[in-house]
Length: 279
Image (cartoon, rainbow, N blue to C red; front, side):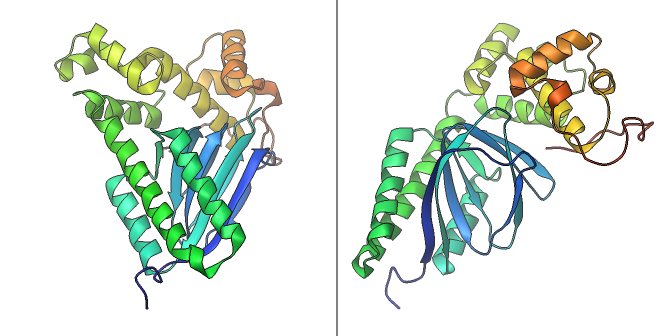
């Protein structure tokens, strides 16, 4: 076996301005993959973990796992990806998960990332045996850019690791009564500095970030349980239903009343609403 023969490319493909079906799709992967969302966004769920991706972002998938893809309402996505198998494919995927357990990261150099992926696609379509080693080198370079992006996030500021962990906890428990001034104090930061760094890393200040997470949580509640808008708003801590509806439509691109619900049961079947375990 030659040096580059320990990986087989199943496909390299691209979709543009794709609209996921309303009920999402389920994919069972029989190979490993590296996938780059360069426009729009998506949600995918695997192993009970729910991930929201916004371009530019790269994610990778394990062989043998099942993934549910869902569109973000009102959002089309453009994506380029490669599926591959073999010992090197297994090593690449295991290495990525070891370095970046979340399974995804925002891309630091989007233009360069896309250009290299497009070159892979071009070589794959040419279907020449002489192109295989070039595709392997390009794939390895994409893995390098992925790890570089993760490390750039980590060194963005001395406190980035702590702030990202706090953001992760907020995503997991958006209904908790968070005291971000206390979180800043725990990390030996003034609140103004904490707020500034949080916005730099997450795109919005901490309380607005929690609000966004609560809206996403509300969407997941309605998407998995047949309950009313009023019940959802109250369960998620919103006392003003009109404010909740306005915020929901702004974030999700669709009103809560029009958000897809399960096709079974009635709005009052669940007299007691238990918290969902999303991370």
